[in-house]
Amino acid sequence: MKRILVLCTGNSARSQLAQGYLQHFAGDRAEVLSAGVDPKGVNPLAIQVMAEDGIDISHHTSNHADEYTGLPFDYVITVCDNAREQCPFFPSAAQRIHQSFTDPGHQPGLDALDSFRQVRDEIKAYSRQFVEGHLTAISSPHA
Image (cartoon, rainbow, N blue to C red):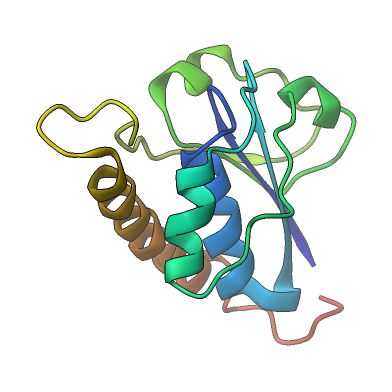
């Protein structure tokens, strides 16, 4: 089983959405965790828009990236530029991947819920592609 860490600044929206979708698409092929360099708590709108798509992230917690520095990861995905710049060193062979998404709380011209839905859909498409491109070669859950 692969271990994936998703990082963003506040661990309140983008990384939470990505954690939910990556875990959904990967199933038992991966353990997905998320963290932030300055955690703020899980945004209720993130929980709401994921529930609209049938994924429950209400049990997620907002964690600091430092909590995971001792764990080995296969992939560390940063989903905002700030997290990429501040990403702590992970003593593992983790492949670092950067895919920046717009902060759903800061999109002028869109109401907050529409903004969260738009970013959710972008992260869903990315997560599906990531799993198809990086995890489909696993033939057994013990690989």
